[in-house]
Amino acid sequence: MFYYNGVKYYHPVQLAQRILLFDRSFKANGDSTFIFEGAKYIEKLMEIGMYYDDAIFFPYTFDILPHGGYGENNTIELMNPWFSGMAQGRVLSVLVRWYKFTHDPKYLEYAKYVFNSFFKVKGSHEPWVTLIDENNNFWIEEYPFDEPSHVLNGFVFAIYGLYEYYLLDPSDEIRVTTLRAAITTIEMNIHKYRRPGERSLYCLKHNFQASVSYHMIHIEQLDFLYRISGSVYLKGMSALFAEDAP
Image (cartoon, rainbow, N blue to C red; front, side):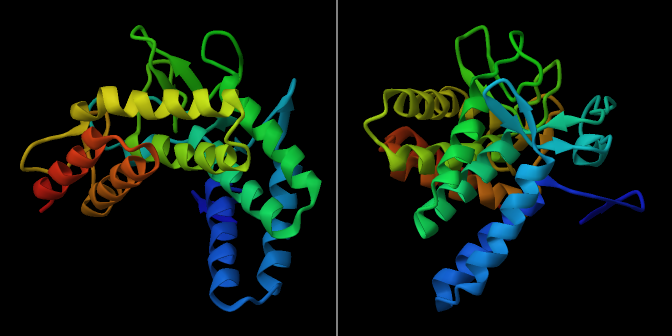
């Protein structure tokens, strides 16, 4: 459980991250206990998930001022319930891995509903975790503000899920196109996050500088995107971010 203002809540990303730790532990020592424990967490996620048409969303049931109110004009709270593209992507990764471990088709079915959530676009559906901007860029939002915040690490963590889902069927054009659209958006906009000689921005809306740990995550994420896409530009930006690191 996640404690926030003295109250316990289910936190979709923290649940997914715990399952990913079970995954790591299983791969390290082969103890199937970790598979069973991860399955319990998955069932809890499915229990708290909210279905909308052909998609499932994992709600945050507490009001929050993102990143603790830091940054410029960061005064608007997200109100319960709200939904995060990062959570959707992390859960998608989990479901793909448990399907590969167990070959249980229910995980593939769950994954399909999570994948469908990425097509519930701002302006055409409520709730939403994705949007198309005026330049036709496809964004996945960690925080679904009316005026998008474009948190970098949350976007890329969501891409991890799209990538793992794509690998289950690389011939699926919808999976290919969605993954490519997300990576292209990073390519077209990553320069906006760079602050030469300083740590990168955490998000664009609040002009909020990333902590040292998040800046290092950005470096690793850009390198990962290079490795899965072959984008030399993203490799170069990862190197520049590394040069900027304190």
